[in-house]
Image 1 (cartoon, rainbow, N blue to C red):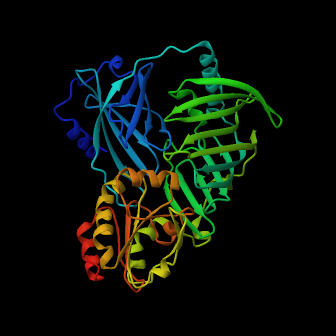
Image 2 (tube, rainbow, N blue to C red):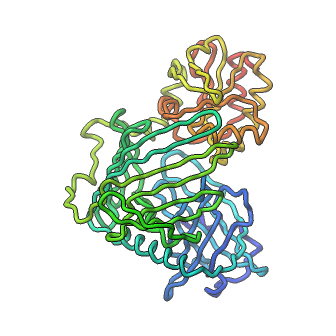
Length: 476
């Protein structure tokens, strides 16, 4: 831990103002001055007796991801907060400045076996002015508090839900449906089974270890569970930043519900059907605008079962990979270089952004560069200009470049247009390519020679090795 804290101290050296800041200089709501950040966007800091708690939100699409609340500590007079996400630990330092701003230093230690390293970053936050709320908003906030308390104090419970995602644009409409079953046992053991999507998945949290099991391929991923890992985010409803509003009463099946609307920012709205008797969520609809004109996404989750006081077997929260000789997916991904290089590339069929079908086997005779990327991935955004140069400069020499992304057309196309990228990108809707090429880190780049053999597999920025590989296939 100390080595990472020293890294943060190096980031903020020379700008420290107070070794032990008065609590009043930290408490309140803080917004990141960098509107384009891919790190933290918002902090709410509060005091409770002798303790200081920090609630954080990180940059996500469509609205910011809620990290939850963690207790801070003092280290060498500096306020420090650790966020245990299971696969990683984010360490944060909060340093008040003379001009009233807050300097936040951040570094991430990854524990997912990927070998990723984080150099750390530091950004300035400005204090937000508190806004008074009308009586209606206060009633809505109290209802959200009651709901959050219901989830924080759950007894052994069973939930069944159906999530329908509807993506619409001027060109197309896409509908997907996923069914989930969640078993919960306090304080923080849970099991979630997801079916109907791209791949059946079972998440098992034992209290210390989190298993993600893929029964169809007999594979699994093992990480620490982390303090913030949980099957629902509803226990944080009363920690939100946005002003809620009660919009109507409505009966949903056997439950009389109060419908609360929350505006999450960036045009995203959420409506929650809160059971008047149990205060559990019976329906959750989130509407988000797309980046392209006329595009939008609606996520509708309906809880057909929300039953507390269940008797749940201990076996629900255990997993033994050796019983089925299951393969560790992370270890398999780490061995991808030795298991894929020199072998025929997996034959995949994906659609491009215009709806055309691209089959890898049909590209024999050309060298093919696949860049697995995402708009949310900072390292991908750094690598894309180089990938674009390969596309523009080497296509006449026999190199075909494709981006591969599992995000929707409405997310990817505007991003490429905004920054002038002309390389084609393929939609890995069901993550077939990710699975078959053993991708566990973004960006991952794969080079396939003219005979369909994988000759290069790398993660992150390895420009010299990739250039040498492109030369080796005669496409430089």
